[in-house]
Image (cartoon, rainbow, N blue to C red; front, side, top):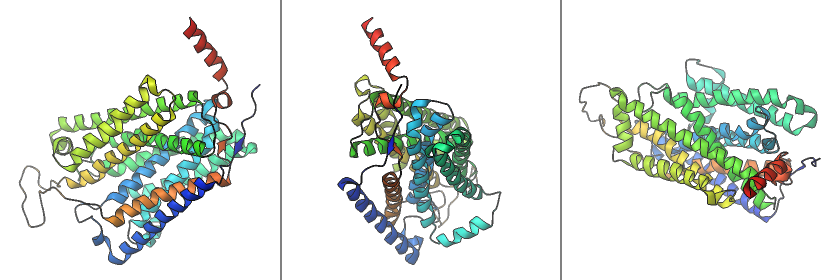
Length: 413
């Protein structure tokens, strides 16, 4: 009979305090950037009347989407009954909360007048997808907090499956709402597509799992906790499937657009427009963020190799950021077709590709949100028991011995 899995806090060693010092510095710089923009206004950013969503929105949506996907590990354990994932579930729930808070912090600070958010939270326009998202974000935090309670309090363990199912369904709705922000914007040819909602769901799976893997390996390495090859292979294969799924949806999205003359201009602009958006799409997303991670994850030489899996996870996050940049910024850079079939010319840049260059305050805001997520995660893991003492295969997987014996017998045969 296997020993009961024991959970323990991470150690507050020198590396821990150095990490907190670095993250605190970045958060402080982000605060300075916020006050700078509050004083001088959005004119100090690279945004304008055409590009109204800038780099901070890319950071914010990247973390919000990742928050939904980070909960996937816990959902597999509780909702789908895979016991090997259950010891990894508390960290999964923690990342879902901290990622969402970090993303929303960037989003609120980028508003310029964050105090106006009170109006949006007390006066709802239910025809607005933004109003729905405020409900979805707050509800997600509450449900995941309850989910963590059922996972970490032994007396509440019997409620983990129904609460986990509620969290699973809620996060699907949340990511659908995030994708629908763009899918409902019929005025933008690069956005107007229902497929964006399921594409954002798969994107959340890949980015969220990549962030989870990076956090898991960093915490285990910093505290000398071994991670079994078997569990790492499970997670890296799952990540590869998610990456391939996102790539498939992106292909379908652009093929569908090219088939329809109304939206073909938007896809041709992204795929072959010759702008920085074309370069980011092909180089950053397709090559660096999709094909290269897939090659690393499914190569026989990388089976269970933490460094290779970590590299693939980093490239996946970079690729996801690149895809979101193309969707958000590239979709606004394409000129609006106010009068389809006619040439429009005026002194207000009509018909011209809209330029955008992120400013330093925007970069600091986005990086500050990531730093806030890292700092909250580190402090929470040092205070509460989110990770098992050992992540070895024989500790996490109740069927590991039987499976390994069968594999050895098959290899000998």
